[in-house]
Image (cartoon, rainbow, N blue to C red; front, side, top):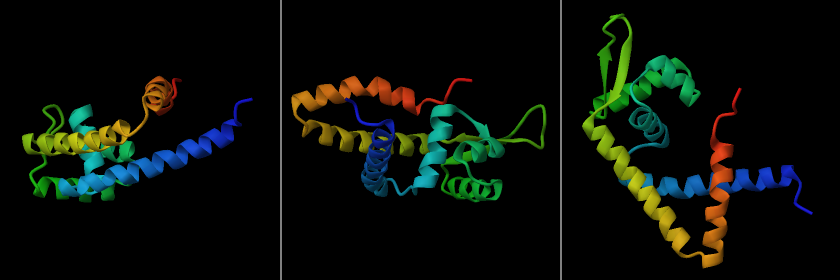
Length: 144
């Protein structure tokens, strides 16, 4: 009989948190904090966004996002542009330097994950590969 969904959810939650903590150790090499890396990731992989949209996606208040964007802007990782149809609206774009840094961080994280996967047995690697579609569906937003 399979374990109760609550037990599986609890174990998955714990494993995800511990895995992300372990991967964050590679972020030290990029100099990005977790919140700044997350915002930059949204912009690099999702495209330009407004401050309000970024705050909503990152689940923070607009003043917090304003500070994060200010830090990223001072470091030359993002830039703001005015909307051509509404000059009050500002779009935030990753700079080429921001893209490079984010991709470097991703390579480091993927490399760290790969090293861990390389230590698994062939059977464990196959099980992990088979579980990926299920994990990916859990990570997707619920359809309405």
